[in-house]
Length: 233
Image 1 (cartoon, rainbow, N blue to C red):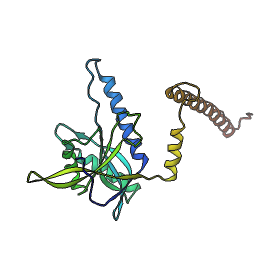
Image 2: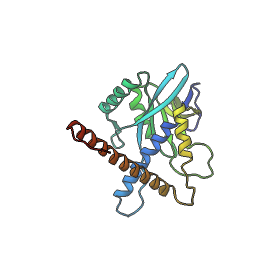
Image 3: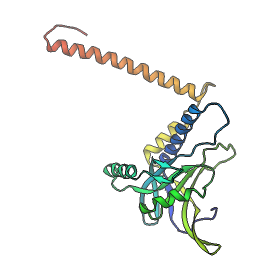
Image 4: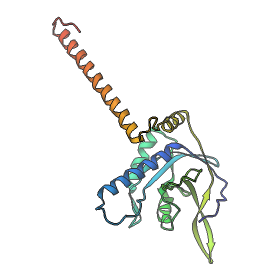
């Protein structure tokens, strides 16, 4: 599983995919912690989804992703859900198609091959994007690994195995602005990031309330004018 790919494909990964997977994992983990009874610690949850993008020749560019309804017990996918999501994306991004799937964990597992094979009728050579949610302060590289599958003969038996592929991060202008904004969202006064976010949201809430009150005044003024009532702002 740790061998390198020999396909010769070039992979470009957009930051939006990493953000989507992180958000998916964080939400599922928060829900799992909220439902726990305080007993023994349960293993971290795994999340699943599809990655979409385009392939031009030998270059595969992964632009976006969406969550996947997958039953890890029966290894079954919700096909109608995938087809519906693909149809919706095609309306907005006609050149995008399903390139593969994503999950979370420290390494690719043998059981991951079930979902990988299940997607082969959609894409005969799906790509597998794995995000490791464990925090390692000493790690400088992104905790993201891209796998392809190759047919190897092991003990005389042909088997599909995961092989690592190199990739580069590709960004468009909107993504660069967003990533730069997130990178600068750090405490400046010793408070926590959550505190800073709460203060930011409180400011937005106050601004919306003020805007709403001004709109109400204008609405009353316009209604009064329609009725011929002399009013002044």
